[in-house]
Amino acid sequence: MTAILDAARAGLGFGLLLESACESDLQTGKLVRVLPEWQSEESQFYIVFTTARGMPPAVRVPIDFLVEKSRHH
Image (tube, rainbow, N blue to C red; front, side, top):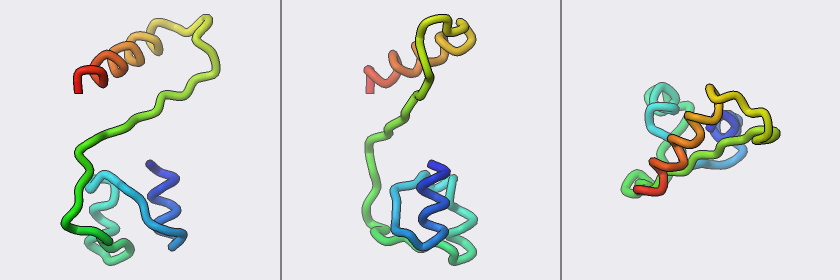
């Protein structure tokens, strides 16, 4: 999300962003809505990690939770 927001701020294109992530940029005019009548109904998230082997439970449990919740939507 940060990379997409940074690219949009730099004028490199446009992206689908959470309104909360770019609200101040919209208010100041740094960013403008391109398709104000359109919204995404889906949400995606990415979890990146080097290896599952030896992963501490403090990391594994939230990953499992997010994967399980995403299956129900």
